[in-house]
Length: 610
Image 1 (tube, one colour):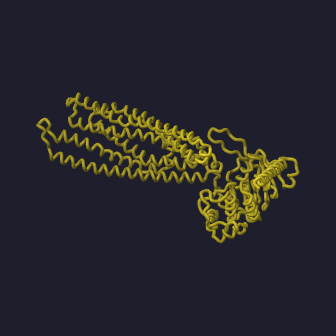
Image 2 (image 1 turned 120 degrees about the vertical axis):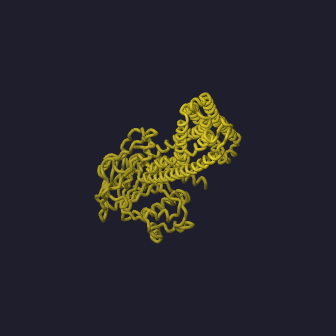
């Protein structure tokens, strides 16, 4: 199931969310009971007023006041407020604790699940979505739990308690208050939707103002050179005017929203007083009950406005939860073996046995054509192999299957006679190391970016690996040597230097099989020499499989495998294939021609500068 396929309704989504974060329902019944008790404190005041008027005052006898009774009544009310206050505090504390515990569990599960997904689900298109789910969508849930969840439960409990007390006093007045107040919910709901949309427009307009202003400031030199500053300043003025209009509209809608509660409160209380007076004592309604009912009506209206805001936030939270659950619904893979088989000692041949592979469709996309079709290849241990082909031929996909970043749709890949599906993941990662075309470096030192690949490795061992690759001069040329900070994603280093760090990282693992996704495809010529030398050292006495984008790599290999449309169309040494009519000879001739043109252009530019 893909993320887009998780489209359950709100109730089903909440149920799935509770199952994904079971801490939410842990002790929920007790929390709800405490919330109801806490909400009862909000009706203590009206009940005390009603009792004081009806039982502590003799209105007909000249307003005689029973101070003793009223004093005891106030003490009882104070004790009730203390108990209900403690109950509400306990409910809020439990809600806060359970929600944070649930979010912690959900975040942990989401991170763990994301790291168990196939690299097929970590491509450039999906990576942004994965980051958004782990960060902004979980943060949306956190914001809901920090306020919306509390308000939903506490205000819901208050509504239940107040309605129950009102019905116990007089069901006719209760129905009157509820019927007159009910339209407030619809009005607030409608107005608030417009207000949310209006403030979305304000944020969008504000973003355009900032974007336009930032563009002008960053491009000041260009604007000055072409003397078009006034024209671009007009764009800022237009964006600012749009923001002003959006803010004015939002303010007008907000100005209508907030008095609505007062208007409906006045209407509800007026209706309660009119009906109460009309019924009089003949209807069994005392003066104290009528006054208490007025206070209770205010209590009934209090949570309605807040609940409308909570419902909007609830919808946002459910949408975020649905997206999070969509990620959790993506099947993990490749799955670790339940009964792993250890690799044999000695040379490890690689066998690709009738392998076909098709990427999973996403959402409503049509099923893609197979990326690989019936690939049969055997690679002897210690061989240097280059896999070449046009873009989309399947060469990168084959490299991923060799490292078990994905499993074949059909067929099998074996190392040393053991299927990759049966090899323990830790042993497989020690045996097969992939150096990607664009290696990722963490914002740390070079030695930290190298050492994590082999936990516990000492500095002397890293230095020995650097020396074995002939990179000592490069390391010593850096300001802090192995302790040089590489910056975010390696930004402090050039593309070629990042590749050198990746090669040192592979060397510290010392794997018998190395898969290289063309480590010299986007580096400067000077660094390319260092990379080529390091690759020569690294590939000695080990099986090396290069996903070749430059055919100079293929020319240095012992064997070249040519792919086209996911099939092996040629297989043999470079010297034989280059003179044999076929796709490799054509690709090589085109590459030689393009290289000659590039070198000629470079020489012409150099002569011109001279």
